[in-house]
Each structure stands twice: as C-alpha cells, then as structure tokens.
Length: 148
Image (cartoon, rainbow, N blue to C red; front, side, top):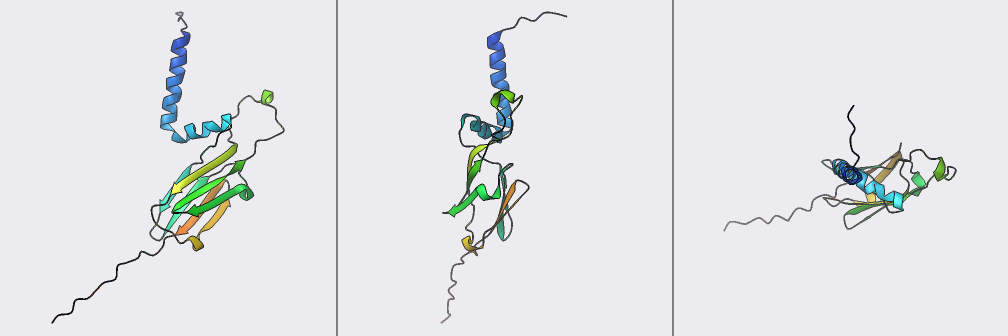
C-alpha cells in the first residue's frame, strides 16, 4: 500500500466543490441548510396545472396543521409557519441531525387567476395540498357587423 501525502488545502477545496455540486443537483438542499443558522427555509413545492384548477402540493414534514398559515394576494400564494425543535435532546447527545425545524416560508407565483372564495386546503401525512379553481376566462365581447 502506498502512502499518500495529506494536503489540507486540497482536502478543503475538494469538500467545498463536492458540496457545491451536490447542492446544484438537489436545489432544495441549499435552501434547507439555512435553518441550521436560524434562517428561514423553503419547503419543496409541486404546482400542477389542470384544465380547470391549479393544485399545489407542499412538503411539510413534522409540521402540524395548526401551525401552517396560507394566504393569497395578487396571484401569489404564500405558505409560512414554524416547526419546533425537540426540546428534550441536548446538542451533545446528537450523532447526526438532518431533520428540518425552524421558520419556513414559500411564495409561489400563480400562472393564472384563481377563484379566491373556492380555494380548499387539506393536510395529510406531512403534505399540504391546496386546490385552487381557475377563474373563468374573460372573453372579449363579439360585435357583429350588419350588412347594408
């Protein structure tokens, strides 16, 4: 077995680039890491455009229904809240901590206007599903031309 000289700078740069390209392959990872420093993280969202409605599915593992707030203004849907950290375990007792906690917020620009009074939301197994019926398209008034 050959001995390999350890270069601290090379190791540091390799870790930096490996982490950077890992984040590039999984974009939500970069957003989720900010919670460690006490920042706001963004949950993953799927927005599905069906013929007559939009459906948003938001991942909120560990969240409780009572702590989720949803608002809609100017065709922007905002989901925010907070997931509390377990208070029983001390930092020294952790071997690995990957679960997400802290304040989260996500604003989604909707591609079409929706009927605000008919929006429905349900929360099951850590997935928030919001169903938003599309507003009927306003068609221009047709004017008939009379022949003389």
